[in-house]
Length: 112
Image (cartoon, rainbow, N blue to C red):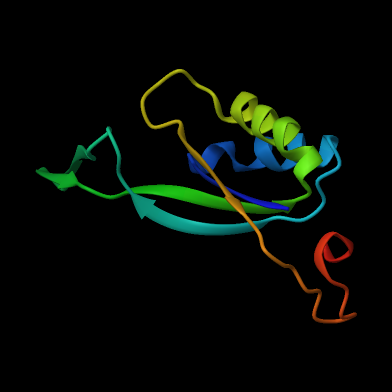
């Protein structure tokens, strides 16, 4: 089992959700986050004064999947989030040792 964590631009969230749903991924967790990478923030103008925004708004999406879905999920997310510009995001893949569904007590792949 894998946990795929993706940090993306907020306006790409709906595209990612729809694309994952199309390949059979039913559950995901979304968190609004702030951060920066190579973008290093940007300058904005507010009431005539310029200021630097160091942390940009992003969305973190987490999806727990079986190993056999990994390639499809990564490919689907990459296609749905790609703009070709700096700041498209990152995909992190970690191994899950165990998953337990609290309501039923199901374990591992049955709990996904």
